[in-house]
Length: 318
Ligand SMILES: Nc1ncnc2c1ncn2[C@@H]1O[C@H](COP(=O)(O)OP(=O)(O)OP(=O)(O)O)[C@@H](O)[C@H]1O
Ligand SMILES: [Mg+2]
Image (tube, rainbow, N blue to C red; front, side):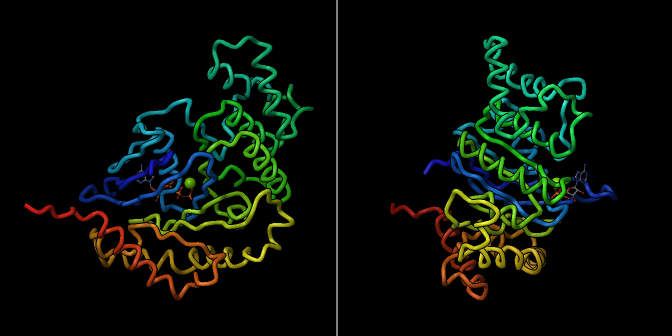
């Protein structure tokens, strides 16, 4: 099956501080994203989440591996991939409207002023900023600035939206409101989103799937966790879904213990993927009755064996 985004054997290495060896931030990162999917990535600080996002954006280079989007290898930045950084990155001398219009004009240079304004306004309205369009970034609150960044990224309608902890600096109330605006805008546009977050509840509210990364160095994308909660979702009702706490516990337990255990195991197995349990992400659906944590070690071994069997060259009879 052809995936919209296919990441294979991705690794990032830096020379070690003493200059004698190399520091592997993450390696053997293998995952896919389907068109229209909303995927969140969670992992401890420093495991390489932003580095992966920047490689997907074409802003950083991998030390090994490939990223294929829509059948083409990602090499360098492109208007087909929009990024929202944690620090807003708006142009301070332009109004909210012109910050969005700037991106829209770059995307559709043939559009006249009226078309650009109308399109930009539509996205500012979706993030409830209709009344603040003429204000410059310095005259906006942090939450409002982040809304402008989100409107700008969605307005240019890239094939892939990359969000690096877009709500990290916001208070809980503002965060909740913008999360719902993000869901609304995503429903409207059906764009594919890859988002980093540290917030387990945010990931469950927003995503179809959560990728879990083990701790660095030598971090891996160890699990792909399905969020089997029907949409539309909102903050108040999602927590009452019967699967909510099963999913939440699964994610929290990964962060508290499995992320470290798998890292320790990987360190013991050196660079041998065949003995590293986290090198191939395990697909988990915690909403199902039989997906308890004790089963995971067995599932992980079975999944790995299946993938390794699949990778083995088939013997052809002479
Ligand atoms: N130029 C560099 N030289 C050496 N190491 C680097 C360099 N740039 C980044 N790193 C290391 O790469 C690792 C991954 O960084 P990255 O920013 O991707 O982490 P992250 O998972 O996004 O963390 P956070 O959750 O804190 O944002 C870090 O340990 C960082 O120290
Ligand atoms: Mg980061």
